[in-house]
Image 1 (cartoon, rainbow, N blue to C red):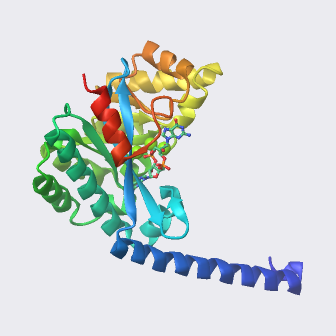
Image 2 (cartoon, helix red, strand yellow):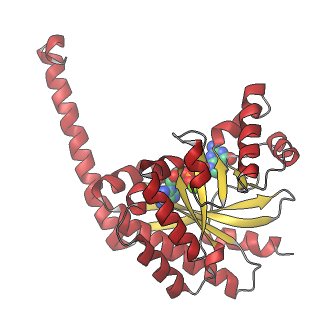
Length: 278
Ligand code: C2E
Ligand code: MG
Ligand code: MG
Ligand code: MG
C-alpha cells in the first residue's frame, strides 16, 4: 500500500516505523530500569457503600518516571505485558498492596477490602497461586480482605482454566471481582460458572445512566443479573450526584468514582481513611 503512494511516502513510512521502534526500545529499557530503581507507586481509590461509607480501596499503579513525571498505567502496562515485565511489576503491586493493607489494619482502622488488578499474563502465569499465597502469608493479612480483579476478557480466554484458578483462589479465602463488566466478550453460561464475588459495571454504562433510557436499561440489567447470581455489584466511574442517586435507587452495593475521590497517594488515602473511621 505504501509503494502505491509513491517513494516519498514510503520513506516517510519507514522512518516513522523506525522512530516508533526506537521509542519502544527506549521505553522497554526504561521499564527494566524502573523495576531496578523502584520507580513504581500505588495510588488508592476508595470504594463506598450506598451510605457513602468507605468499604474498600482499589490499588492503581503509576510510574514515577525521573524525567517524564507520573505515567498512567495504560501508557506502559501493554508494553510490560508484551515483554513479560508485568510479572515482576505485578508481584510488586500485590506485595505492596498487601503490606499496606496490614499497615492500615495495625493502625486500628476498620477492616477494609483492598483490590488489586491482575493482567492477562499474570493470570496465566504458572506460579500465580504460589505467589499469591506466599504474599498473603508474608504480609500477614486476612485473605478475605484481598480482592483480585480480572477483566471478563481475561476470564473468557480459557474459561475452564479460569474456573480452576478462581476456585483455588477462593479456597484460599481471596475474593474475586470481574472488572470492566459489559464491554468485553462474555458468555452468560460461563458467567454462571465462574466462582466470583463481585461484578464491576464498566464506567461506560454509568456515564449515560440517567441521560438516556438505553443507558439505564443496561445498568439495570447487569444489576439484576448480578443479584440473581448472588454477586456483589460495584459501579465504576461514578462522577455525579445524579448517577449516585440512581445507583442507590437500584440498590447497587458499592460505588467507585471521582464523585467520592480520585485515586490518591498513600499518605492522602490514609488521612481519608482515618477521618472516615466511625
Ligand atoms: P480499572 O481497573 O478499571 O481501574 C479504574 C480506572 O478508572 C482507573 O484508571 C481510575 O483512575 C479510573 N477512574 C476511577 N473513577 C473514575 C471516574 O469517576 N471517572 C473516570 N473517567 N475515570 C475513573 P487508571 O488508574 O488510569 O487505571 C487504568 C487501568 O489500568 C485500570 O482500569 C486497570 O485495568 C489498569 N491497571 C491499573 N493498575 C494496575 C495494576 O497494578 N496492574 C494491572 N495489571 N493493571 C492495572
Ligand atoms: Mg480494576
Ligand atoms: Mg474497571
Ligand atoms: Mg475500567
